[in-house]
Length: 356
Length: 196
Image (cartoon, one colour):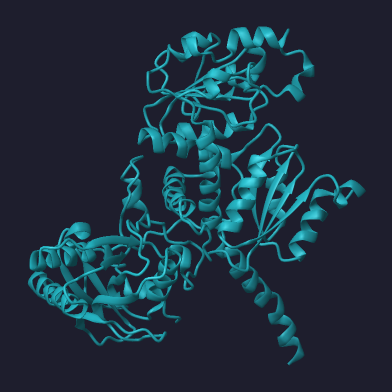
């Protein structure tokens, strides 16, 4: 069955044999370990979830009895709320833990907090952390499923999947599209996860930023080696050249909280040279889509007229975010309970044998 | 081995049935659907307020065909919908869940006579799931069930109102329904497992 599907390349099929199954993965840490086929599965399931979001009664019993714990050690509105909403629509119990106001304030380690939550039967743990790799660390040590909701400047796979879905649902495809990612790439986990997803789906990716905001290894590191998935990614400092003929413009938030390092002379200069204005957008294709992962600094990386203009799909990204997270939760849920039961059976077996 | 929807469904690639027998061919399927269409009209007094809703995947083309037969006989168009039961199933095992297909209920089913259409009726669990899904969309006047094949082995108190063919089977057999719209040809085949 798997070989059938990969033969279809990147074309998404709306229907197929009735027994096509998802891959049933346990963790969502980044898109680097997603196959093209698996990304397409998520995008297809997202379509099904969007239908649920359009119903009068937005509630289905799929994850009844499952517990989702969201652990957010960094500020977030849309990601946390959309995970919570996604879980609740699927009838899971969702518990939110934030970095402040919990035992984290008393100095408890990430590992111990997670173990505590797992002991309370959390089936799925959604974690956002300031340190890259924190979700990977948890995934190695916990039975529960782990979903990365953003770790440091490393990865934000659910955002990338919702971006891919938004592009695909507008353009009907991703391969062959010119996607320009403009802005603070150095600190952007959104850009990194999107790079994996976009290159796997065959988009032509152009990164555009001031030289100080492009990671050094992108300019002349492993990326330039032949055969690397990112080898085809172009870097363009001039925003106007980058925007020429673009199908999609992804603007990134200038991470003001991380701008103390002197990467930019002034915000005004950044905005004048790299901000997306209506005039600059005219250089792109007429049906260009403008995206932003939010929250926006309007007037810095994106002009308000563009952010709220006809080409903007920024609000739709938020709506799709709920459906994408529902699709991911749907694909994850089952293995947890079963693997735990099996583990328990294995753990109890020798004890019973000894008693006899 | 626990029974599941899986066993009632096409799992075998279309060409290498080692030990299989065709129980319904194109003509037999057409005749069965014609009869079901007549029975639906008879029961509903002309198809007034009838909505045919197919279960993904092969229930959907079956529902479309029934609708076109009904139109042929009465001249009235019958509405057709599709329902994906993935979100309502209780028999998902082994981790990976089936890929979702779009549920499409194009009309208000409140007060309508809904006929669920599926290819193989087996444990009844998919029908239970489909009824749960339907009630999320409204309160139909009645829900009926049409199945091309009833293979027995029910695990829930569910019975079909319209059946193409009753085929008594063992649980070691699979009933494979193929439809031109999806599989390139029309036939119903019984495959004995563990032979290939």
